[in-house]
Structure formats: C-alpha cells, structure tokens
Image (tube, rainbow, N blue to C red; front, top):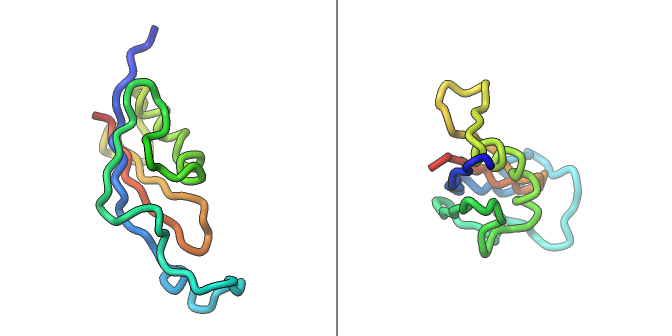
Length: 104
C-alpha cells in the first residue's frame, strides 16, 4: 500500500465581493463580506487518513480535495517550482478563499 503524507492547509486570504468585482453581478439578499467560516492565517492538518479536517467548510473541501489528494500521495504540481505545494481556492464566486496546501 502507498504511504500517505499529511497536508497542511493555510488560509492565505478571504476576499469580499468588493475585492472581486467593481460592481456585483448579482444582488445578495443581505450584504456580504469575506467568508465567515475561515480566518486569514488559520491552519488545518489533513492526516494520513485523507479526511476533511474538523471545522472545515464542506464546499471548500470539495474544491481543494483533488490537490490535497495529489500532495498526500507524494505528487507535485508541475506549474510550481516548489515541490509538495499548491495554491487553491473555494468556488464561491463572490467571496473566494485562497488556500496554500503543503505536504508535511
């Protein structure tokens, strides 16, 4: 069986709609700021079992899981010079969250 590595997920930046769009393409029901689930600088560890860390947003997990899996199985992303790292984001188009993923 292939040995897996842990992966550290760091929240690099949460963005508000005003940082993404000059004029919002839709009108939210209530005003939106940055994602309220995460905090900038927050860290999570994905253990060798590959499961979503406690307290992590399910939608964001689905968006970054493929990269987590590549890194945990020892793979690298060919578009980065650094080995064992990735930058990914959630799919919330109005207020995305940018994550750094690192094999540890």
